[in-house]
Image 1: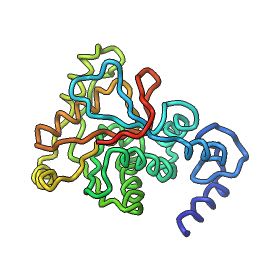
Image 2: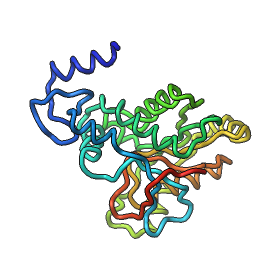
Image 3: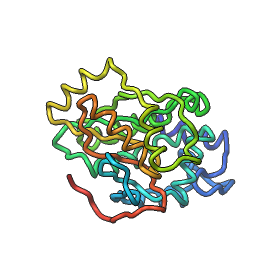
Image 4: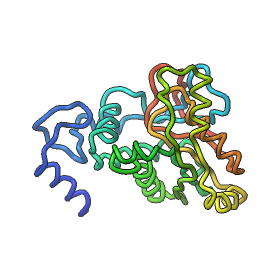
Length: 243
């Protein structure tokens, strides 16, 4: 496949450490060595929730915990400009979405928005790229899938010094609905489609809960949230989630 060939060629011409483990002088594919790629392929989605969950948090499925090669790949993708990782990470995200979305119903991915400053620093909308790759994977597996960006994000204070209630308030107040998309999505929900919020990492769940509440104001009923990684400070039950 031409795209795969070009990616492999870029790894040869522009050698870089493995995004997962940092090892150097190893053959890479989309920025990952064979060992890290194998570990990522072995991940299986699981249901996760913070303890306690914030009000309004939808059912959430993660691909893995925020550690090891998954953490390394996410950091390299978001913070170090390793954008070729969007393809393998997007494929993993599709697996989490599939746990929430029946194959016989249309599924729409709703991305958690980044601020304008974050998009400038990261060379674009990192979640839009991941969601686009996830949609391609889902369509190839038989889903009728699409992606939309119904929200925009305003700057908000650093959450490190905020209480849980303050983090929830800050997250919700920073979100604005793109009014041009509301009518379209209302029609989609009436036809019984599955709406899944997608993000890269869930920590306290405040952002996912705030996004879900904002979308509910626009009559968009979220089925669940799919993320790549969950922090280790949470309860998780392994196994397939249905519903």
